[in-house]
Image (cartoon, rainbow, N blue to C red; front, side):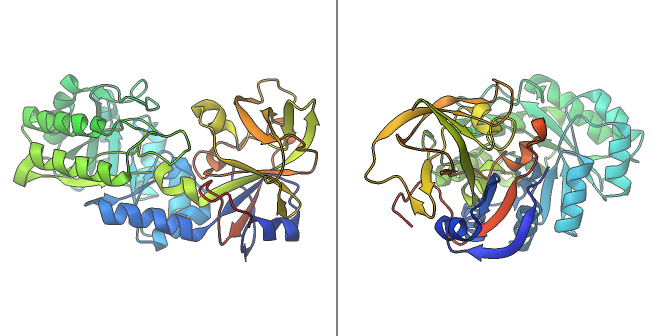
Length: 394
């Protein structure tokens, strides 16, 4: 589900938006320049093919701008994501990196969307692919492996990836069938353990050596952290330097082409979320017009606390007032619709005020549900987007 976009009026900031629109539905506020800034960080620091993990935020305006920024390939997990890339990034390559696929999904990917890069993590998936796609060196088959759990990350290895000691056999089979073999890994979302990349690159070199192939491409995945207030991650430059050194040390002059597929680190700062207060109870609880079944699902599951500020009309209500700790509830009839964190907000916050959450570009629009009929979220554009770094009044 995507938030419907209004005509692309660009408001200077949140204050001007509220003064003009007085949004009564959950609203995403997007700044093109912040997405541009994030892309520049990766282009400057990473020596390889920059792609985007569509799952993180599949909004058409995100995909379109990234394509215009020069991204020539996208990481897709489903036929629906392929449709989005085809429609909003025409001509871009698609890497089908979800190992779990049906035969019908593979067929559509290959024949309808022109996918030529597929990821597997089990020998049966290779047989499944070969039954539909004629083996050719023009088809890349990437084996996803895992080499231990990264510290301080959301672990994807529970579900995906063959263990390092079993990966070489799959790579050999890929090569023997006549496909072009490659490797990929994903250290886990919001990974603050930079050395997890080093360990996996070392493992990739060992797998390639055991399989007896010269690796053409290595997809080092995503997991690069967003700058949430509680993040203890080092600067992005440290990730890039660690990756480059690990590739040089493990592969030398036969280094493969690198692919990177960030999601969160690209889009988080580009979007804030503006929610309206529907009810305040006893100076302890605030009920909003969206919650854990909608745009705040990621906040509940990932247990991060985004920066917040409160608006009373077009003026900030964070200055010259007392603050209290509040529990935030969503609008649905389910008691599960509550955030586990406590938020510090103005003590007199009341009905019709707005709470703006910063750093909300990742896994918010991607995880919306229409539960209880709360199915409308709106999309706006702003020149300056709230990230929590500047708390001064607009």
